[in-house]
Amino acid sequence: MKTLTRALFSAILLTSLAAAAEEKPNVLIIIADDLGYADTGCYGATKVLTPNVDRLAREGLRFTDGYATSSTCTPSRYALLTGQYPWRKRGTGVLPGDAALIIEPGRATLPAMMKKAGYTTGAVGKWHLGLGSGGLDWNGPIKPGPREIGFDYNFIMAATGDRVPCVYVENDRIPGLDPKDPILVDYDKPIPGEPTGQSNPELLRMHPSHGHDMAIVNGVSRIGYMKGGKSALWNDEEMADEYVRRGAAFIEKNKAGPFFLYFASHDVHVPRLPHPRFLGKSGMGPRGDAILSFDWSVGEILATLDKLGLTEKTLVILTSDNGAVIDDGYKDDAVEKLGQHKPSGPLKGGKYTVTEGGTRVPFIVRWPGRVKPGVSHAIVNQIDFLASLAAMTGQKVDATSATDTQNVLPALLGESEKGREYNVNHSGGLAIRKGDWKLISGGGAGKRAGGAAEPQLFNLATDVGETTNLAKEHPEKIIELRELLEQVKAAGPVALGPPAAGKAEKKAE
Image (cartoon, rainbow, N blue to C red; front, side):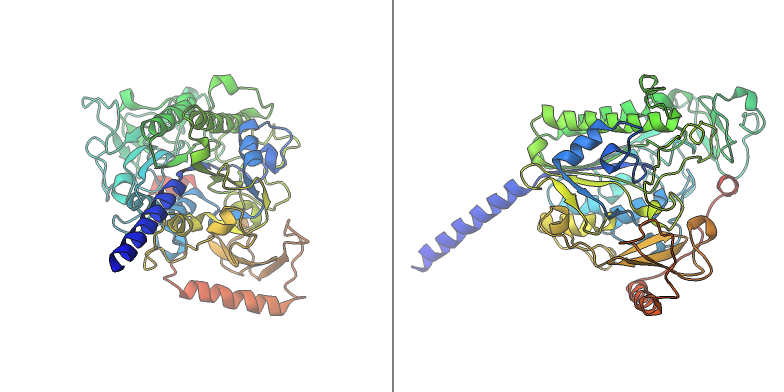
């Protein structure tokens, strides 16, 4: 009888494990760069067409209250991959292109967790989380990097398109690099004999509006100084195509699954130099054309899933690293040709601000047959991908390092309208939202970030544009939200402050 019972138990266990394995989808995170809350049709845009993003929203769940933790790229990406607020660690501000890796190998990360769950993991596109351990020689092995924090494969840019070095990194090498033409990168001083945007503006095809006047690559001056590596330099106009090729190849190679792909588009970040097939198509200048480029990238990746019969087997999450910015350092007609388009829609502010437009971003989840299409008003945050996907794959999160990630899987899958109880925004200073009420703590964030010397209190249910400060009318709400924010801060270290940066980086900011 005991033998029969054991056999029955074993059979039930094997059946449960098989069912769980069948439930394990591929996971694809598509993250845009500087795409505003209302830069796509499904979020209200009418002046620019985004049929592929709109398709994803139509077939999936569109969140009205989805957030990045921070209003700039490095800190929000750090939070997404580590499950920790970036303001708990110094050095997580916007990084120069020669920064060391800021995610310690061995700590809990989203890719490492997915890898433990049996996923093949890949990162394609923008990185901007540092490489190496300081004083990196770009001509040799480039590590630690993505592979040391859990990615099996990566094809990335080190930082951003407006920062040197302007080359790709595949795993731990620069592809196409000629050893006879070594790369030299300097963020402190110009390299003798090398032209710069400041001293040689006649060599430029796109001129800076502020900063961005150092090394010239492909007729565009960047942040930082660079020499060499001419055979390995990227072509700005081909960048979206290159990332799509690499992302599609990763999916095809790992179609037997399960795979986890972090696909980080560079669109719509500056310099905005989309492929010629998009030029003039938006009617809004290069920024609008770059939105078309991003939408095309989404379409190509979705088409790859369709072609390989993986659509039903893949959980797709689309979002942006922070809110929109119009003029971000180049004279590209973005302001002049904006017209009636409102990148943040009804929200106040954008990139660099602690107001809603800085961190409330497009946020779409699609998993056909599992996630019912529709609209959700649950409060969700990218920092929760780690705990939520861990729950989906039957794992536990290391709370000693991933201090702030929460399991909101039911909300992400549309099974619950309850997401986060509170949400913390970051841009120099902190803001906290609980329910409909949001407090921007006084003194922490400067005017550029949307802060003020005195606390600002808003009811987002009636004032999503944060136009009326209700601090005097509701002092009890200020006390409540301040106490909650102090509890959040007490859960781990707090290291608010400016990031370390080289002279060139400081000049460009």
